Image 1 (tube, rainbow, N blue to C red):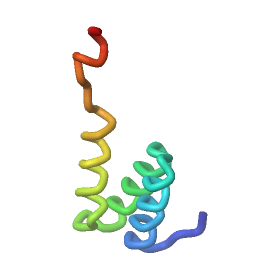
Image 2 (spheres, helix red, strand yellow; image 1 turned 180 degrees about the vertical axis):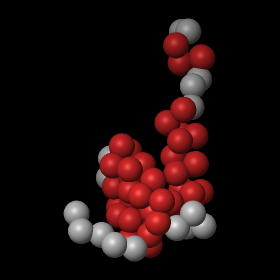
Image 3 (cartoon, rainbow, N blue to C red; image 1 turned 180 degrees about the horizontal axis):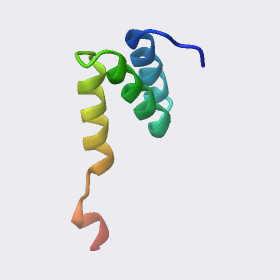
Length: 62
């Protein structure tokens, strides 16, 4: 992967997210944030973190 700008990393992260490749998406968002702390990747990563951290106790207690 030969990406340079924060925008390119953000867009690649979005592509991975659409393919359900969560780990790759987060890594791209992190790289975008490193390059530009004001990138939209900040919000995208936060939302993905929230999704991955979701825990529904009812799903584990039938």
